Picture 1 (cartoon, rainbow, N blue to C red):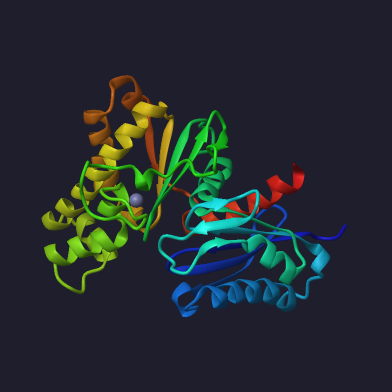
Picture 2: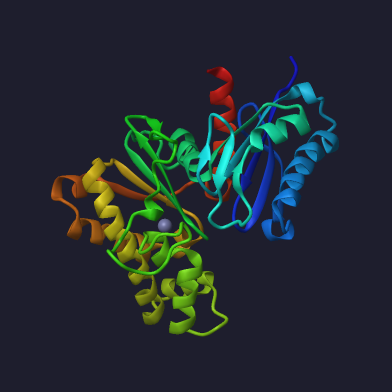
Length: 308
Ligand SMILES: [Zn+2]
């Protein structure tokens, strides 16, 4: 039997990750580039196309052995038409028909969706959310992404735009957000915001990894830092828990490495602020698939679309 493969791409504000997956979604080869090294949209699309072609070439694969290409994008996407509406943290993208462009250039079927939705799909099918039917997955990074599983399937909403927990307003007025509105959760806990807060509290060179390490060694300032972030997050999540009566919340992305102080404070805040039935029900876990969640989710997307 001919072996079949999927090419999966996870485009983030920081990195463009590409992988070759086998039909069981095991990673066979992987590449990563800095998104900023492609300084405009045309170059970035060419970079995506080149990395697809280089897997085929370097692995000596026949084009017909590739089932399809799956792409996760950090912003609102029309998953069925294959149009990227815009990318809040990558300038120059507005109503781009990426599916059509890439299908023409690669002669392969291309499927795409929002990256946080793909992460939710991956964690639900084979990660920390496996076995739970009502789940909110968050990824904390440059942006704050979200994906919702309701009654065992990915909930998309009317325009495939549901799940945007990062743009849940925390206040009536507050800091400006990447989406153009104000006082969204992301404007309080997105990476650029918390790095600014970290530099004020510590020094100009500190990284989030260092603050996580300090917190694990009981440094008081580091604990205060993560508690503040977890409290913003816990309050937003309390609203989601009340609204949706979730079984589980899964948190991934760099910030989730902060560990016990982050997760403990989120749970405490939910118990304090959400209604008791919903608050007692919900479990909060760290994402299990780590950096590969977007890639694996893109693989599930291709399989799902092809079997439909
Ligand atoms: Zn926003």
